[in-house]
Length: 227
Picture 1 (tube, rainbow, N blue to C red):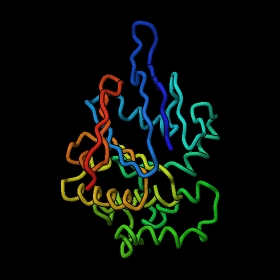
Picture 2: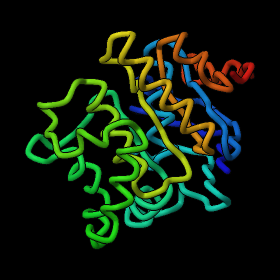
Picture 3: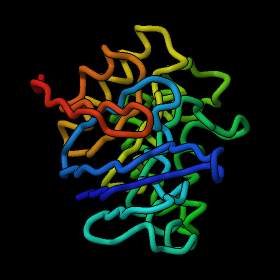
Picture 4: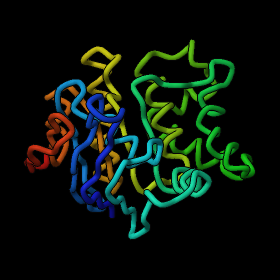
């Protein structure tokens, strides 16, 4: 489904040039759940941003469902992100003036679609992740774990084929973090493909595979026993 071939990302020039990614190659199949680990500065978030088209690579190739992404212009990348890729960040990025349901419907609004026709789908997602009774609450009326669930529901409303998560439990205590990881487990079992950046080894052990980065290079890829 996803293929990276010799992906490099450099910042600066000459002696000041730094390799954020240096020759990274791997493939992801539909239904995979991959945790990306490595020390700070190893290129984890850069990798996620390149896969999602938020950052441009310096060289190499990225394919999603056979379509080459690194040659697309910005408008074409936006269309891919809206239709196929979703993001879950460490920060929830919810609009405080909107209810949970209204926040979930934002991608529909940005895509210029009729929100009324998609509201039932958004409600279904919120109910599915345990927020059916909280959908009309605003972010300041929700716990951190509930806000992250809203962010996940927002990421799923367009039925993406790939979910990218950057430290999704980084701001949570262990109990709330485990609730989000339980939700990721559930979504993956239902067929969602997930690539998650994390520093937390316990979180990474939830995934089917761990990719380790160091100094911008992929140093190993470890398959894990599926729970």
